[in-house]
Length: 307
Ligand SMILES: Nc1ncnc2c1ncn2[C@@H]1O[C@H](COP(=O)(O)OP(=O)(O)OP(=O)(O)O)[C@@H](O)[C@H]1O
Ligand code: NI
Image (cartoon, rainbow, N blue to C red; front, side, top):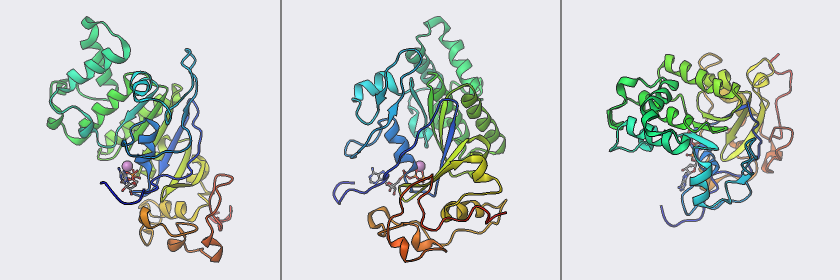
């Protein structure tokens, strides 16, 4: 929508993601996860303002470092999207071209990204589909003829075609039934174990626990905690009260919903943005906590609190 002052959808985010590592980015709806993913692919809307950098490291086969926030659209299209960063989009049905069959889109992507000769395209596209458990019998369908789960698998298959060393998966398991969640999580983890980096954006903390090496928790556009998955999900637990609240809300845990709602991004409270919902907030929280040692909080839980 036009007009109005800019909204800070993502603020002060900083992290590294290595080869063979999965970072799960979790947080409630509207906290900025998809905006961050879009920024990493140069897919923000034209009127978006960005500051800072998002650098893809040089690759083993000679591709130079590239800052996706500074790169031109032509460079992003030619050398980055699909080749160095693969995206599994949040709304796969909207991402697929409506008037063409899945097979046609798969073959085109395979041809563009891998240079497979024409006579081998059919087999290569079927192999790509199979990698994401997309059934060959559905390849001749149009996107609107697919269930949500099938559209998701088609999108995953397309994202994997180029063998990009970094994958960004935005809610890759949302809307899938249990078996498919398992399958998708296993395929993503296989990609990581094969040496790719994966930024896995998800509401699903159970999926995050299955595939992540580290967890970043986002609240109102900021990362408030970034820690090892083993510590996050293990006996120590997270240290940020918001992260603890997210975990405690799981049915498998305390099933205790977090009271309150996240703030509107155009009306953020000063200081710590979680303070209005935080059981530990004090007058110190009127000041924005600095992010240090993987945490932005004035009153982190003590390490032993869950023991
Ligand atoms: N083009 C835009 N113009 C204005 N505000 C936007 C725009 N795109 C996103 N936002 C706002 O940025 C915030 C973050 O949105 P984002 O889609 O990144 O959230 P999310 O964490 O991915 O949520 P969900 O889990 O629902 O996908 C939201 O409050 C949204 O309203
Ligand atoms: Ni999103």
